[in-house]
Every structure is written in structure tokens, then in C-alpha cells.
Length: 88
Image (cartoon, rainbow, N blue to C red; front, top):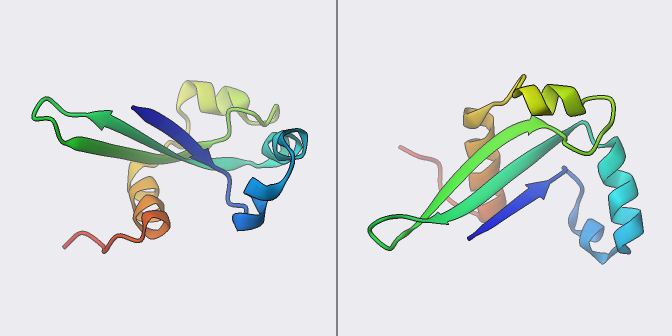
């Protein structure tokens, strides 16, 4: 259904031109990756992880190898970004 990467920049990031956004993505070391998918029961599932950036040339190989991929940190950050309460 959709996949989004967040690079730790504030709300002002979306107001920048696409070239300016891409330039900042090149230097961001990490990203929060949120993925929405349709479950077999028709509900929407959410998957999130925190990982090395796929755009930063200095860490892209770590991204491709899955080095440092952190699901717990991704879920924590996704809940914060989406305004959801912490899991009990």
C-alpha cells in the first residue's frame, strides 16, 4: 500500500524543493522506514524499522546488508511520529 522513509528532519523538510530534499537525504545517516500493507483479514498492517539510509553513499552498503536494522527502535519512533500510544 505504501512505504515512507523519514530522515529525522522537522516539518520544514516537506516544504523544500525536491532537489533540496534529496541533497539532505544524501547526508542523513539513518532513516525511519514505515510500510503499510493490507492484511489477509482486510485490515491495514503497519511495519516499521530504523536503519541506515539507502541514499547516503557512506552507509548504503550497511543498508543493503541490513546491518544495524532495529525493529524495536523503528516501532518506537513510528508510534511517536503517528501519535500512537506505547504498546502495553
